[in-house]
Length: 132
Image (cartoon, rainbow, N blue to C red; front, side, top):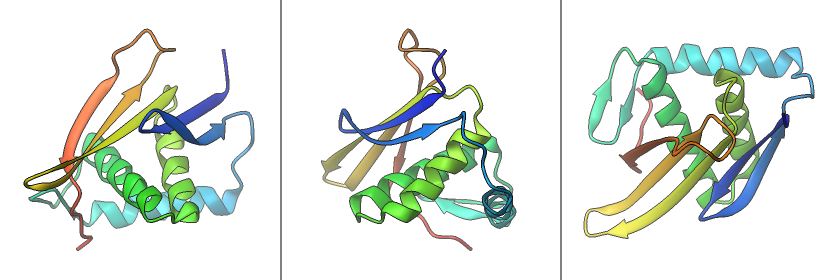
C-alpha cells in the first residue's frame, strides 16, 4: 500500500502528499483552525451554509484548492491539499477538472478511496465561494 496521495488537475499530477511524513504540531493546529473557521459558515456555490457537514467542508476546501492552483498560489494549494489528506485518511487520489460554460467556470472534483478501481465520489459545484 502506497503512502502517497496525488492531486491531479486536468489529468496531470500537480500535488502529492506523503502520509509517512509526520505533520508538525503547528500545521495540525492550523488545520484545526480551518475547521473552526468553516464551522462558522461559508458560501458554497449559490448556497449559504451555516452549519457545514463533513462533505460540505471537503467540497469547500477542494473548490478553494482548485482556485488556488488556477491562481498559481502554491502555498495555499498545499495547505488545502494537506487538509483534505489529513481529514480523509482513506483518500488515495483526488482529480479535478474545470469546464467553462455559459454560467461561468464549473469545477468537478473526484475523490478516489481505493486504488484506481473506484469511480470515486464526483462532486460538482460553482467556483464562487466566500467566507462569512
